[in-house]
Amino acid sequence: MSDVIVIGHKAPDTDTVCSAIVYAAIKGYKAATPGELNEETAWVLNYFKVPAPPLLQNAAGKKLVLVDHNEPAQVVDGADQAEIIEIVDHHKMNFVCNTPIYVHVEPVGSTATVLAKKYADWVKNNPTYAGLLLSAVLSDTVIFKSPTTTDEDKKVAADLAKIAGISDIQAFGIDIKKAKASIKGKPIADVIHVDFKDFDFGGKKVGIGQTELIDINECYDRAGEISSYLNELKAGKGYAMVVFIGTDIIKEGSELYFAGDAAVMEKAFGKKPEGASMWLDGVMSRKKQVAPPLEKAFTS
Image (cartoon, rainbow, N blue to C red; front, side):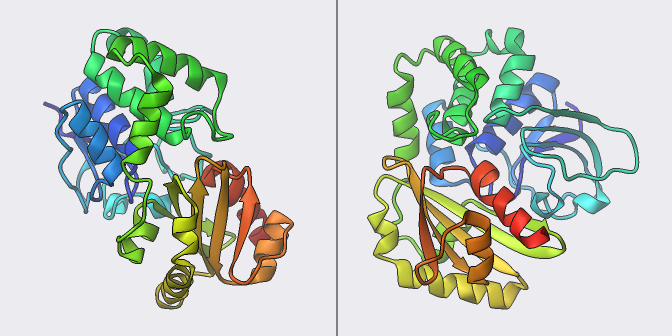
């Protein structure tokens, strides 16, 4: 087997882990994860009886393929001392390399969609991996409710469902989301960091975490804890701002909690925050609806 390692971003989610597993299988590489799996991803791997990839927290000296990310702040530790040979992604490009490498990026709802399209002939003969890719598409598009969803995502999901033997895509997607759609009894630090990404907005370090829930009241019940932790994180880790997105997948909107300048939030979203948070109806995507306006507010 090749010594190339396929790895996703820090604070791994279902798309980054499943895409790494599938692409490693397609290419004869090894898959790894830079962090512990969240409950949703663990549920998916258990459902399809696929073992979790090994943990790789420092990639110094390794040869890497990056999937589902290219933002330097999201890359596994030690990547600056590794050889990155390829990127497969669906995010905007923010990667600088001194040598030519293979890069495949498409404006679709998940990296799994990119892989399912490119390697359709391989996937159709591997129902288990089709199931992993389907799960990743449903996760990243929030069962097609996210504005990042494209017609290609829906078509790919329908094809993958047939291969994987999933008769009801919506019901399966809800089962996936239910696996981590509650924050009751969980340490607030774990809730905020389960899907947390660092960004560089005009030289300012900004952290944005997100969780998806069936009932946004779970966030409201712990609003004080959330705000307190965000302020501690901002003060202790050198952030210009830290944002936590509590997304209600039923109401199709998000409560944005933040530690930082309220004027920046108002500039970004055109709405005056109520204390240290604001509700944004229809906002479901960090990638498309939260990070871009925040970047613009910081850089313009």
